[in-house]
Amino acid sequence: MLDKPAPALEETNRDAAERWVRAFDAALRACSEAALAECFVDDSHWRNLFGISWYFATFSGREVLVRELLARSRDAAAAGFRIDAVLLAPRSAVVAGREVIEAVIRFDTVNGPGFGAIRLLTSPDGEAKAWTISTTLDYDRICAARDGERSTLHVRDFAEADWLERRRDRAAYTGSDPDVLVVGGGHTGISAAVEVKRMGLSALIVDREERIGDNWRLRYRGLKLHNKTPVNHLRYLPFPVTFPEYIPKDQIANWLESYVDILDVDFWTRTSFEGASYDDASGRWTVRLIREGAERTLHPKHIVLATSVSGFPNVPVIDGIDNFKGPVLHSSAFKAGRAWQGRSVVVFGTGTSAHDICQELEAAGARVTMVQRSPTMVVNVEPAQIYDRTYLGDGPPIEVRDIINSGVPLPVMKMAHKIITTEVKALDAPLHARLEQAGFRLEFGEDGTGWPLKFRTRGGGYYFNVGCSELIADGKIGLVQFADIEAFTAGGFKLKDGSALDAELFVLATGYKGLDHLLEKLFGREVAARVGRVWGFDDATQELRNMWRRTGQAGLWFTAGAFSQARIYSRYIALQIDAIERGVLAKQLS
Image 1 (tube, rainbow, N blue to C red):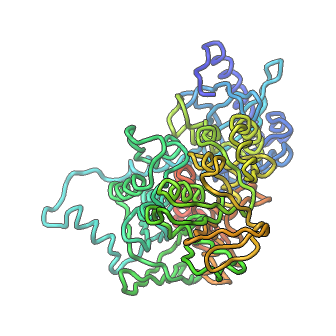
Image 2: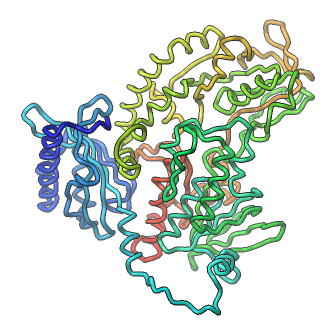
Image 3: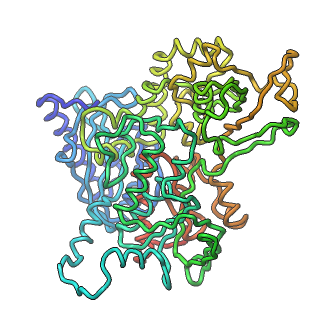
C-alpha cells in the first residue's frame, strides 16, 4: 500500500487527481449541484472533521453528501481546492478491497487553511470519481501564522523572574484561573493540554495520582502496549528509535512524565476533582478540588474530562460471591503474581487484562483458572497489527499517515475491517481450533469487523495473544464457563457437574465503567441528561458520541481513546475552544 509507484503510474495518478480536484473546485464555485454530483460515486462519503463548518460528522450517499457540501462550503467560504503532491504524491492503493487513487488536498476557509484526503475510483475510460473525501483545518499552519506574530526579541530585565520561576508561579494559579481544566493526566489529557497551550490558551491538568504517569506505572506488572510503537507516537516528541516495538507500562509512564516537563505543561498531581457547577452568566465553572489534602476552588471557562473510557472499575454484582471468604480484587488493584506462588487463583473475565494477569500468575507458579462470561475475540499479537498497517513500514511521515487514516469514514472502515478480520482468522485458525477444543468461546466483533470497532463501541472485549492462549489450550491455565458455576462457597465455587474448585483469591477482570458513569458522578444527573451518552457511535453523525466536540453542556468536553486518537483528535478540542474564545463559535451547542 505504501510502495512507491512507477513513474508512469505516478503521472497517471497525478493527472487523474488534478482533473478531479479542478472539476470539484469549479462545481463548488458555481454552486452547481449537478456538477458536484458528477464528481462522486453513488456510495460516496464525506467525513468533515471541522474542516468545512464546525460540525463533526460523516455524510454518506451522493445526494446527502452533495447537499451538505454545497451548504457548508458556502457558509465557510471553502475554496481553492488543490492537490498537495509534495505532501503526498497521488498513489495507487487498495482500500476495503477497492483499487483507488489516494491523494491529499488543500483548501482555504474563513476559519483558516484546511487539508484532507480523497480516494478516487477510476473507470475503464480513465474518468475518476470520488469514493471518499475528508476535510479538516490545518492546525499547524494556523498555529504557525500566529507564532509569526509573536515577538522574538532576546531582551530581558535580569532583575525579573527567570523562566523556571515564572513557570512555577504560573502553574500555581494563585489569583488566576486556567482557561481550560483537564481532568485526568493520562496520554489523552496530556495531549489535549499540549494542544490547548499551543493555541495560546492556559491549561491545567489535575490528577489524583502521586506522580505523572502513575495511571500506567501502577497497573499490573506485565502490562505493555499491544500495538506497535509507530502507531503510538505523541505529537511533537516521538518515541526514540531505541524504544521496543511494544512499550512496557513503566517506560510509557516515565515518557509521559518527561513529555509533560519538556512540553511545559501545568500539572497538579495528588489532586482530586470533587465536582463542578456551571454559571451561564459568567461562562465559567466553579470547580471543587482537593489538592494534597487542602480544598481549592478554580473557575475555568472549559473542562475537558480525560479520564478515559476505562477509568472507573466495573465491579459487577455476582450473586453469591459474598460467600467466598478470600480476597476479591478488581484487576485495577492487582499488582503482581509473585505473592501467589503455589496458591490457587480464579480470574473472572477474558479480555486483555484477564489474560495478562492469568499469564503472569501462571509464570509465578500459581494455579490459575479463568472464568469466561461471554465470547471474546482472540487474535495473535502480530496479525493484530494488520489493522494498523497504514502506520507500519516505509512511507510518508506520521503527519501524512494521520491525514490518510482519519480520512476513512465509518462505513469504509467497517468494510476494510471485515476483510482484515477474515485474513486474521485464517492466520490464527490453528490457535482458534485449539482454544475451541479447550472450551473457549470465540467471536470476531459486530458483523466480523474485528477488535478496533469493539474498542470504539465498548472499550474492550478482545485479547491480543502473547502466549496466554497457548497456556489455556495446553491446560496449564484452567477454563470454566461462568454458566457452569452452580454456587460460590467459602473456599471457591461448586460446578453444576458436582465438582468443586478451591481458590484463595478472586480477581475480577471485568472491565471499567465508561464516561457516562463518571459524568453523572461528578456533574450530577441534570448535566448528564443534557450531555447524553458518551462514546459508541451516533447513528446520525457516524462519529463517536460527544467526543472531541461541543456537548449539550456548554464548556464541557470529552477526550479518550488510544495514543493515535489522542494525537489526532486533541487538536479539534483546541481549535473549537480557541474559536469560542475568539467569538467565532458559539459556546452553547444549539
